[in-house]
Image (cartoon, rainbow, N blue to C red; front, side):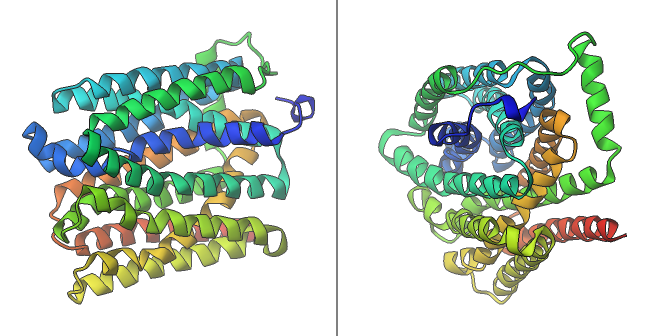
Length: 398
């Protein structure tokens, strides 16, 4: 798509764009406090309950593979409207379910719809911005996304206690309707410039083959994937760990918010420092803070400091570190081949969500009477991401 032909990115357009990006993460996390009680409510194991999270994440990631190339081919707006409509319908379905199996199916469909907002939103950032400005906008996106988990878990916990777990899904259905109107009235209806004579499946295959042949793209995606897996492992296990420490559904959000709020700080620092320092020093500092925060949490857990604050506060460092790492890594994925921005965002999104789903599911397979098992898992994931980053920077230096 030709960015020069687009209208200026005004304030309301940017707000609309951020809302579309944030909707999927909001839907993912608003029901986390309810997961603590779904096992008893539906008579299911904790591993089965975790499928409501992992199932959402898998389709949230995998559907981006379809939405990304389609948005490159038929335009961003139509793909986005379809996804939001599907997510709204699935939210209504989830609110009406009386079994865990039905709830899992509804969550899978909800994730499939919400995927459109993430992949199309990132592609629109590529369409509208370039160079360091794109990294800066990605940092603003990171700040917006960082607000979602703490806000969603706090609101979700309060709704759960006062109105029941179904209220969270009714809220998402109403938001989906609002966002559908915002897309229809507020987003430009641009037409793609890609060749539409080639069959879309063949064009999609060529796009992905082109991207996967770029080592720099693969390594940038690996960094994002491991960063997301680390965070999702935390999200998936935090309600269990905090429950073992005596924290109920209405209090979980206040501890979970530590990491996203710190992520906002890191993203803000990235937006301010990227033009002065460049992306490499920011990313190196981010990985150091990430590993250091997880290591401190693990040391405290192994030392017997089994309290909610000893679990959450060290992860302030992880949040700031992720805020420094993610914006440059995202900009590196969608900006490498501008004509394939949608496909690039899709691959990045799929990798993030699949590894995130794996991390979120694995935490349900081991006991969490304290934070040590989670700490070891998060440390392995973080070190894998740091290794991919070292290889990326070494390759650039050659």
